[in-house]
Every structure is written in C-alpha cells, then in structure tokens.
Image (tube, chains in turn red, brown):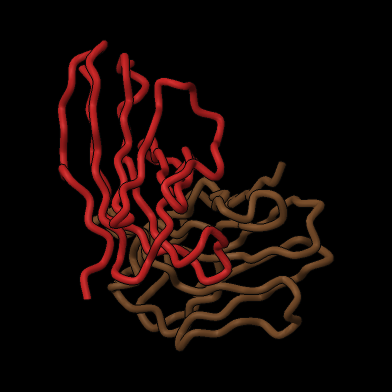
Amino acid sequence: DAGVTQSPTHLIKTRGQQVTLRCSPKSGHDTVSWYQQALGQGPQFIFQYYEEEERQRGNFPDRFSGHQFPNYSSELNVNALLLGDSALYLCASSWGPGTGRGYTFGSGTRLTVV
Amino acid sequence: AQTVTQSQPEMSVQEAETVTLSCTYDTSESDYYLFWYKQPPSRQMILVIRQEAYKQQNATENRFSVNFQKAAKSFSLKISDSQLGDAAMYFCAFAGGTSYGKLTFGQGTILTVHP
C-alpha cells in the first residue's frame, strides 16, 4: 500500500521562473493539502483540495495555485519565484477534508530558488 | 486564529530514560484535535499520537503518551524508554473549528537521544 508520493525530490529554479510540484495521495485518500516548511520552522498551510476544488487557503499570495485531478492526485504551481520561496514543500492526504483522523505526509520536495 | 507554541527549541535524553516535550495552544474553539508529529532527517512527517479535545482521557500509543490539560490549553508529549530512533524534530499541531481542514503547527523541538 503506497503512501503519499511526491515528485520531484529536489528542484533548483531561478528567480522569476515557474515551478510545478506533484503529489499522489495514499491509496483510499481523496483529500490533498499542501504545506510550505522553511528551514528550521514548522510547516505552514498553503491550501487544501477536495473534490477537485480548493476548499481552504492559508496566507499565501496568488502566485501559489493548485489543481486536483479526478484520480485525487494534485499539483502545486508557483509562479514568479522569489528567493523566499525556497523551502520544503510537503503534501499531505486524508480521507475527507476534516483532519480528525490525521494526515499522511509525503517526504516532500526541496525547492531551492537561486 | 489558532496558535501553537513549543517553548523548547531543543531537548536531549539518555537512551532508556523518559523525556517530556511541551506544547501550548490558543483557540476559542471547543471542538478540535491535537497532534504530535515526528520529522526525522528523511523529512517525512510521521503521526505519533492524536487527542480529541472532547475526550478527557489522555491518549497513549505504546511508549508515547500525552498530558492533555484542556483548561490550561497544554498538550505535552511524554516519551518513555527513549530509543535512538526517537531522535527527530517533533511538532505539535492543532486542527479544529472553522479551520478544520488545516493543521497549525508549532515551531518544533529537536530531540537528541544519547546512547
């Protein structure tokens, strides 16, 4: 039973470029959330997707956008990259949008903006 | 808005000993969940234990247990018989109310286990 799969593992981009990160949820899960984790900090909620719609959003600019596909997988897109976007991006999945059961996290994508 | 505070940036423990990690939170919600997650160098966030706020009984999972003080808004994690594999960053997290779909994390506590 595969857990949450994220790709790529590492990524280096130039300031101003655009990036797409991908996430496949754990089997049986239908909800995907994305978090940004700066070095040495706790993860910050970006947004959550359920039934192919953005259900909740954290305090992130519109440069951060996402998508969920019919197979529940998800993409995180970041436009006009800034140096401050360098971080570990974590994807978490669950069954349903509530978190009472807790989320299953992937190992993340380490994004470096130079 | 909910906030979660972990006041111990770093903690250390000898193997086989017991250690307690502290967490306080602030919320006006009455229905919520609290979690402890472990993040080893592999980066994957692993759920250690969760607590439903409406349950007075403290949650336990093998060597891990919590001390949930709802009135004080305190949620500490006790690790008994510490093992080398327990070394990691530990995060306390909150979810509930209108923000039921998101986790609010604390700043984390780095736990070192000495052999």
